[in-house]
Amino acid sequence: MDVIQVPVWTDNYAYLIPLSDGACALVDSPEAEPILELLEQRNLRLSHILNTHHHPDHIGANQRLLEAFPDLEVWAGSFDQEQHRIPGQTRALSHGEPFQLGPLRGVVLEVPGHTLGHIVYRFDDNTVFVGDTLFVAGCGRLFEGDARMMDHSLNEVLAELPDEALLYCAHEYTEANLRFALSVEPDNSALQEYRDRVQARRARQLPTVPSRMGDERAINPFLRCYSATIRASTGCGTEHPRHQVFGILRSMKDRFRG
Image (cartoon, rainbow, N blue to C red; front, side, top):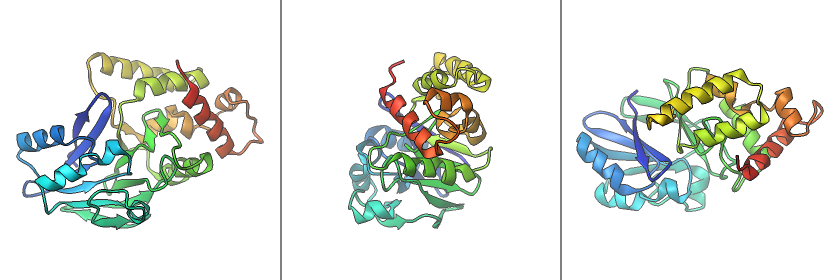
């Protein structure tokens, strides 16, 4: 599956997915101009927008793109449709609902936590667009959901993804996330090695997205709440439920200035 990364502003990513006959889909729409320029360069016609959630840096260009492509289909979650949050939404998707984009097939996963209506697009080849739910070595802030909800989204719903799943998140937050991860699990050798690879990529101004689910299991503290070191860092013991460890960890990350 071909994915074209579209850098926007300092740390946002949108993604173009070529389909057939010059059509393509767009995952999230931060700003119109970089997207329109790339469409023209690649001689592509936008047929679909796949919004993951309603935040402005994910839907900000919907209206402008609808003006440029009046027949555009706009997909997003059913909750966001009920709340009238997505400009131009034409299809509401629910958990487990299959979809087809040209020759590509996939299924939608509901992952509330960052927002209540956040969804993920999982394609059959295990290319997964995770929005602001799971970042490389991190996760999204809890703007609408709570720790129990986000923990379930990551450690129950996304935990079903295979190690080879390729995760496309919406922000280049990796270096900061790794600094926090190392502060709570400094003895994790996989994390240390991953940091070194990331630093080498960023020194060449290369993206660190996508990542693989297998790597996230090894380095992402929010998927590692079972770790004795992380539990010690959060002041939790084996008697504390996972979602409580997760919540403390998320609060620590919110305050982290390393």
